[in-house]
Amino acid sequence: MRRDVPSLVARARDGDPRSVARLISMVEDGDPRLREVAAALAPFSGRAQVVGLTGSPGVGKSTTTNELVRALRRAGHRVGVLAVDPSSPFTGGAILGDRVRMQEHTTDPGVYIRSMSSRGQLGGLAAATPQAVRVLEGAGCDVVLVETVGVGQAEVEIASLADTTLVLLAPGMGDAIQAVKAGILEIADVFVVNKADRPGADATYRDIQGMLGLGERAAGQWRPQVVRATAVKSEGIDDVVAAIAKHRDWLEKSGGLRAAHERRAAGEVEAIALGVLRARMGDLRNGTTLTKLAAQVAEGAIDPYAAADALLAELGERL
View 1: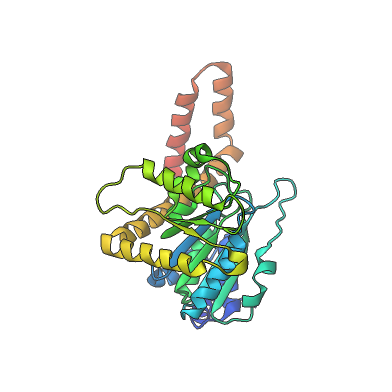
View 2: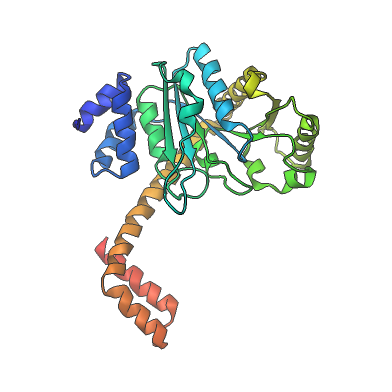
């Protein structure tokens, strides 16, 4: 049932899951009323603690997320979960596995879980994830857990969205050289060595500690925590929650929390602006301007940079 935006936002604020779902669907689908949604949610932004979970496929992100939800609910927090799953480059479909793994929380009114398809977006997140976080903040979530697609060494978009980034590792990820060169490890605020009951867990723990020892930090700079856990057995989760809380305290005392929120806002503004520009560029591409310029470049009449300048000039006039 379609409702006006103020009504949807009001019902979401009251904890109505259908209204929250409708708002996130509007964000994902690029609904024409999205600007109105963003304006209505703006007063409630920045109130939730956003925790990102990332790591390679199979390290236990979903199981760890499930256990973190359980621990946070015991502490009395209202929790939102955004779980991003990869979409097929061939069919566009996605298996939203977290709906299966987190069934125990589906009847808890203090938990909202939303699976999202990446829809081909690179970086481990969906394009709609930042705005979906704002919806969950508006719905009164104290903590929002964002679980990324299983990522490799360079997908670090989660760091620009989350206040605290957890990088999950597992025994057998590789030797110390792999640990040093993996760019994803540089974004971690907390390392979680999951499946710590398996052989090789101690070696992985030592490799990460050794990698951290190689870096130089200014006085007062955060040193990433390294925590062992076995999420499938609910072991070590309290230590993970404690590490998250410790990082939150450091952010608040150092002023880093405000800086993190400003970086997140800057990324959102830039993404929206680029989206508008892409749409306008599409209009030019479908028209005659780009076709004429491309023909002139192909003939050697002008160079590509001059053609790009001409295209941007016309785009500026249309803006």
